[in-house]
Image 1 (cartoon, rainbow, N blue to C red):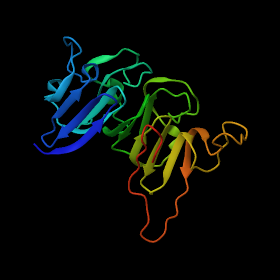
Image 2 (cartoon, helix red, strand yellow):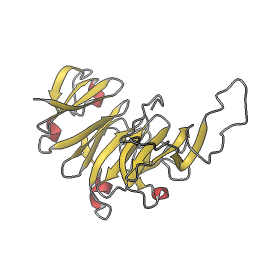
Image 3 (cartoon, rainbow, N blue to C red):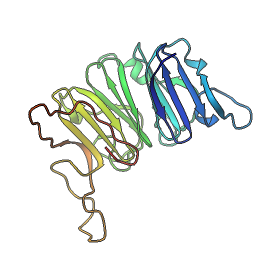
Length: 239
């Protein structure tokens, strides 16, 4: 079957097939295959049977955890969970995909259509353009105005009425693109406006690093035929 999307963690991989099935391989603890013998490692792709009844539309992986969203708008997560990045309200690891129930119950802001796994935090976008964040938050990468960890998806109200169309979670930052083709970022970043530096000037340090706990707009020269269409940031902060 044709492959339509692939995502790589540190020691595991996810592959979305055109049929809506998900194949996994790599380190056994992160594969979502349930209880395993030995190390459970898979050297070749195997279909993730726990999701057999769902038609998956997107996959995403963090270093040691994974998420998928179904065509019906349900979000599933599994793997390591030491900062609550799975979104289940606790810090317990999951060996099989488990539905994120808090998003399933929130029908007011639409169903989930996209998600992105960062190093220790995650983002989810709904059909109405609303954005949710959860997990680790040491550098304000959740965009909620503080540095408190969230164990369940929490809506980022600081984006106001902006409708989000593309999202990406990085190592210590997040970035989104809105319907008006405006980009916003938060956490540790350096290309945004109205920022305060995290430290005083140091000639031996990188003084372009800033920290924001709320979304800040990224300036973009909107020339003729020039407009951002998508955003992506890797876990090492390259855009």
